[in-house]
Image 1 (cartoon, rainbow, N blue to C red):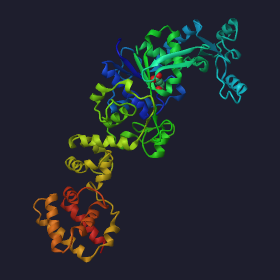
Image 2 (image 1 turned 45 degrees about the vertical axis):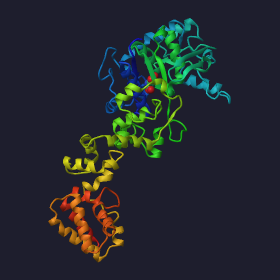
Image 3 (image 1 turned 90 degrees about the horizontal axis):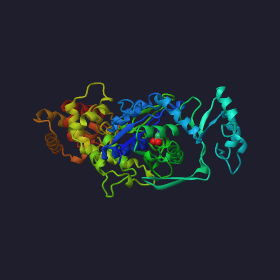
Image 4 (image 1 turned 135 degrees about the vertical axis):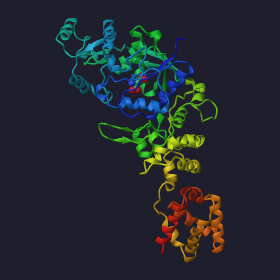
Length: 508
Ligand code: GLU
């Protein structure tokens, strides 16, 4: 077998959907497993859909996920350039070759003429008339016009596109690595444009030419590209490259949580979860989409949850390190049917990966999620203790702030009414004498604090249940959080005293 070479070939049109990242991942795993090359090729031939910044964003997403290409526009490589817009001059000769061999033709129709044809042929049974074997003879192209007329139109510089001439009554088929035999009726496929009036190839021509020139051995792409496969198959054949055609696998869609249809960014917005890998701000609308990285997902967890969205190794195992994935991944075990996205499950993966990390490893990852809320520089020693204390309560990196903000800054007393309701002189005296006793606590640790708390309760004839919730609210502002004495230990003597004192005063 020739060397394994796979590619991820995105069009730089916006944020990277998690389905796109999964496509990258499956390509990457396959390449690593076979000692092959993983190529990033930017398919930017559709200038009208080009969005500035989108390529850089894709590169950064791959970097964040640890899915680094061996060849790319940034890294270069033997088959450079890797941006199709920079390869423009290359495609025309192949389109010309197809025309010369009778597999493609010049079409001179203006957009208005095509529109008129569509209107004219529109009926209840034919709602979407196409430029195809039924209609091409009625249009202005080198098949319907005389040789002389065609030559003179070309000479006059009349704008034209080159279209593939889809054969009639043929079946084209190929073996998909996931779906098995797939066949298409050529009568149902229109005469796709291959080369546009501005000399740019369309995706269909460019993808075939580049997969050939870049010696791609396997092409894994989203299921949405399956309808384009017959055009590509015929191009491989018509260009005389059939025996070099990559093996294809069309990956199943990632579905909405209810299983009905493809998961879109809008579904994420509606249901409150991200669908993009990293924050993406659309420069045209300034709209920003919530994303996995900024929400506090670890790249390892993100990669793991994507790997098992549509694939498993045949056992119950769900947690896989990258090394294990490289060993165990197999394209033939990718399911044909779509995979439902489950955000709760996605969070479960992240929780698992957070628990696996040491405090030391989490330190740099958690820091930005805390620092963004603070005016002063974060004490790393303190942060390490906080991480150790609340790690098991955290599912997302952003949870470290939700679950521990009161360990960095004085909290708002949201639940003060709950203390107020049962407040009395006896409790007030208890808290005053407890904080007075702090001077005698030799070691400011949670165990010593708890002992002194219990002793003081005894002296005041109170039960633990009478004072523990008020103490929690004094320190946290609310009814949640880790052990109260641990909290007191971490925020220190002065801050503990001051929080208790200010509540006592506000309840006077
Ligand atoms: N440029 C296509 C995309 O945006 C690539 C499809 C393929 O891999 O053939 O997804």
